[in-house]
Length: 172
Image (cartoon, rainbow, N blue to C red):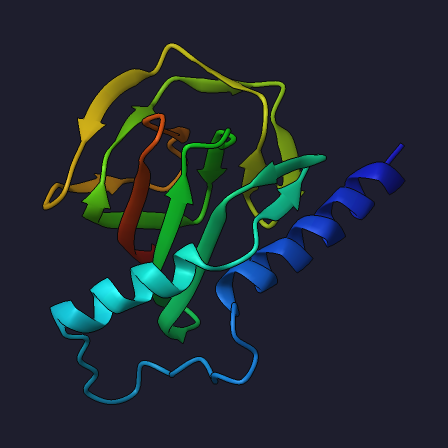
């Protein structure tokens, strides 16, 4: 039955919009002019995101917050902060991710395939479990690239947080 998938999709769309537009009073800047974010600004955003209320997805409270730095149809950039909470596997069929770790640490499970994932529409898969992936320890200053269609999942170290900048580029 497709109704539950539609409902889950609408809920996740709402959560995504909520994560990306944490402060409705701030307009999302368009990438149509020179833009600059100092190191101090990025550090300040980490503190702002830490104070956000946890989101709820799949009935699980998750501490995850994001702020979009700029956007256009084929390119977006945002910072995201995750606490040591469960985070689901994800796959973006149409988006490459270039990630630069700012603070904290995590293990990244990448590759393999997602078993029992939920198709959220528009090429987005969430939930389930990654089978056959590889693990990579991540810390401040690390930069990595996740090609479109690659399953990935972050495991934030207990008592820690993971704060990172993401540049997403739509696959041609």
